[in-house]
Image (tube, rainbow, N blue to C red; front, side):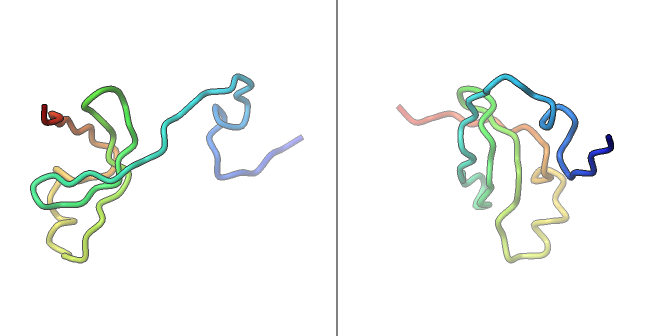
Length: 73
């Protein structure tokens, strides 16, 4: 049987139930980012939320990049 899907094989064949945190927005250097949590104080960029085309040319904000931040005390 063939299965045509947009999901990765790991997502389709995964039998274990994983608990993933929901993506959230964070603002860094004035740029609003949609981030998937990857541990305390770090995350992976999912999307740059901006209306300025120049922001998308900056490689620091590419989807898939890891970012780190410090939470204020």
